[in-house]
Length: 212
Image 1 (cartoon, rainbow, N blue to C red):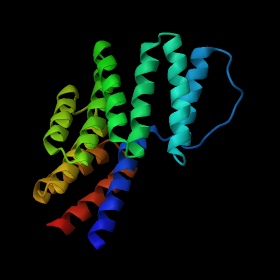
Image 2 (image 1 turned 90 degrees about the vertical axis):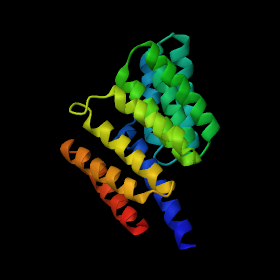
Image 3 (image 1 turned 180 degrees about the horizontal axis):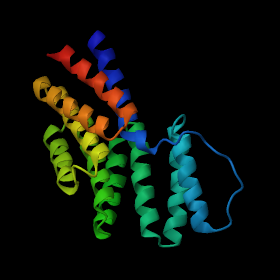
């Protein structure tokens, strides 16, 4: 029973870790724009606020944004919406739908040669496969993301990759490897001055010591 509760807590923390970069500090209400693209961006930002408390509502709002981006054939907006929708499905544990949208985002980012966003999509897919228990695919996605990044310039993303690796190793029964990865994540987040992520990495490190 205790282990089940711990595992549930870790999953909740993992969702926070993954979606953390997309959480704004506060929701702001304002007049609706009459420009379709501006309105689409406003809806996408609204969905990120809504996702803090209501994943389903956030999903509906992001889908509205996607429709507007598609009407304007705005590929960046479409890819960003796909990624957001994939994250919101992930937050609801809808793994099939999440993978579908994340892969769609991945393909568009690759077409646009946007390596940073491609890496973000791969990181999300790595976490998704890890949650499904497909450790090999999880590590493969995270490794692909790692190969796209510059260690000095992408410290926060490097930390997310290391955290993802740590999660996969812990869940697959290799906490010794998981500990190494979480310690690396702590250092990346410290250098990036991402103290919220650093604190979470400390918590995961403590949990990993518990598993040893």
